[in-house]
Amino acid sequence: MIEPIETEVVIVGGGPVGLTLAHELGSRGVACELVEPRPEAGQGSPRCKQINPRSMEIFRRLGVAGAIRDNARLPFGWSDTAVFCASLTGHRIERFDGIFGLSDIQRDELAEPAQWCGQNRVEEALRGCLDRRPTVSARWGWTVDGLRQDADGVTAEAVDAGGERRLISGRYLVGADGGRSVVRRELGIRLSGQTHEVRNVQAVFSAPGLSQAHPHGPAVQYWVVNPEVNGLMGPLDTEGTWWAIIIGAPEDPTAAWVERALHTMIGAAHPLEVRLLDPWTSRMLVADRYRQGRCFLAGDAAHLNPPWGGFGANTGIGDAVDLGWKLAADLRGWAGPGLLDGYETERRPMAVRAIAEAANNMRVLTGELARPALDDDTEEGGQARLKAAELVRRTKSSETYTLGFVLGATYAGSPLVVADDGPAPESRTSVYRPSGAPGGRLPHVWLGRDRSLYDELGPGFTLVEVAAEAADARWESAARERGVPFTRHHLHRPDLTGLYGAHYLLVRPDQHIAWRGDDPSPDAGAILDRARGAS
Image (tube, rainbow, N blue to C red; front, side, top):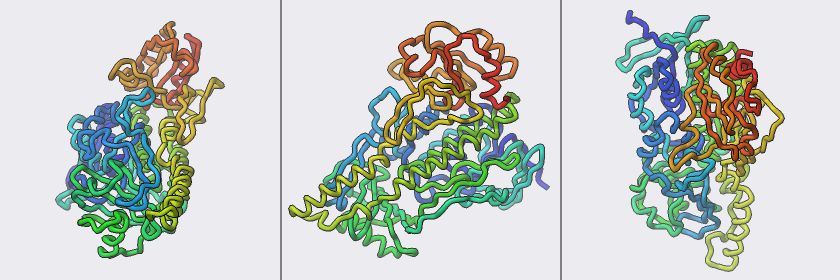
């Protein structure tokens, strides 16, 4: 019998979520075994393509944002445009610029802009950086097919790359193994929600010269509004590899049907070669619970999001960060008994909100936007395009301008947050209103050309002193008594008290605000106890 592998956390699944969790835990010195059946990244269809600004901020903190940008096949800042057109080579209906926070122009509210990058390229970058995490061991080509747990730990039953059965034991286990999660099945946790009846297919195809064959200029998305074939498409790189989502596909589309659909979307018989086909339907499902004993679910194992708006993988990356710092706190002995339960309390409502946003975006797709004569060179065609453009602006703006949802996400109401009655501006989907209210993401400011306030935050809790007066030294004493990693950052920016709504902020390891106040001598121990789940 081969000796079991002993670790602190077993991570099942090495997609973007499992890899982010491995980096999060590894950055905190936690021992992990990452188990992933695929020997290499890059296999399969890249459903996720947009890494939003919040995820890129997370990757900046983990020191891997540059690696992701370097591995993206569309350069940083290549385009921040979506075009709606009758066909790729036909008439333009509408154009949205500045979408998704993709611009490479520095702006105050972002520590990192978004990056357009296929999921496979993200995985390659995150895999390539794992050697920076000496406490993380990756088991590529291994498959988990069972687990058992007791009061002290969890044991995963796995088959290694050579076909040998292995046991991996840890204090905790996280299932980040996708929509068909083995971990979720083993735990007996159900998904609740609904599945959309429309079938779709994503095609990845090679079409050299296609970017030069249309009149619309660089864009990350081309929404094709066509009465015959509907969907959207865009480049995956600058060498002629493209993706397309064909909405309303047959159950088993033939190669000939897909090629005809792509040529209709392009509006010309441009030479192309289909490389991958990925049939799918939109699913709006959330796990009934995120935790059972010492096992947790994250990413698609916990929630399945429609792609409209690009929230799915990014929500999972947020799961990994929220769970990661809490697991590390528990394993290092400074978590209270309620901290790990706070993972579901905070992240499950976030998934519900993301799915609701995506479902709202799905109410109007390209089929609902289509009109007769859209591609005609006639007065009737011009009028049809004007009417379609008005409908596009009215129904699709919130799908492409999402910073209010992405940056304005809050854990207000969490038992790990000290609520107050101070100013709390609320963001809307497309309108971000920075807020220092507890539960929200710390509003970002630049402290220099390339120096972010986020770069000054410590790995544990950080007391940000916004104004001139230093807070009481009992903060350090309270943190030391509890074993809580604590950093003090003296910002000395009284001009920012209006932005943050207070003179002092306690910021969590995930850059969310746990408490704010104007008293330089509050009960620091009680505040820390609340934030670490001990009260």
